[in-house]
Image 1 (cartoon, rainbow, N blue to C red):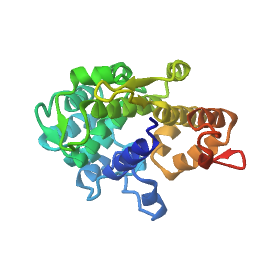
Image 2: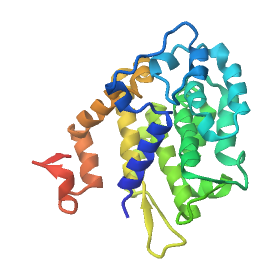
Image 3: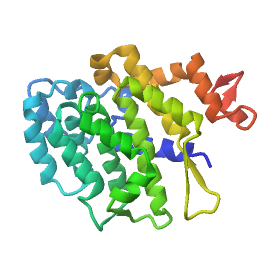
Image 4: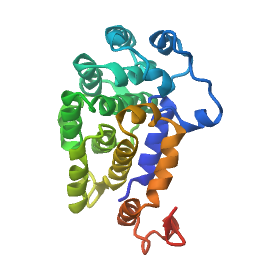
Length: 280
């Protein structure tokens, strides 16, 4: 059971939620906000997404201010642009707030799909924070296992067709993607080992049903390669821009990218994913 459609839909939804500013906004020529007070501009922005050119200019001293604003808002969808900002300046306090939201803050509640997707933005923020923050990094490493979410997730979904395992696997998949944002060397080895064992999760509710994390692993690898190519400073400024989407297409055509594409989409089984011997 491959999960490409779910992951594409989920990641696109997170883009639209705003933590990962959708490249179409770049194509439409959105004008970046001015640099005079980037924190104020984040908080007053009418759109949920904020250009990374603004995010990289937020001073670390404004993290407490952002955390107060984060806690003053009730729903995940009301916090997305603040999550974007905390991804760039948050420390241990931000990590604690984000992990609390992902696990116990909404205890006993059922979130609709929009709120659930907005909550996913916390995982990508933890990936950015994990470049320097070991607590964020360690949380994500543990969060790559659905069994972890079965233990720590205290909220549910209003989508009746989605089982608890569906939620846990989705969160684990986004955690795997977010690990790539850390840019840490050891993540390459983790992805290699997961690929060797064809990492997946067998649903207890569905006889013979297995959730495969191969697509999430490829996205994580692409983030890592982009980080390696640009270096930390440029990566932080460009990872949510159209440049990353361009790089993703470029990487698919490299020997490493093609190797992973072939593993996930064998041409003999998925010929529509290939054209003239190259990934589509």
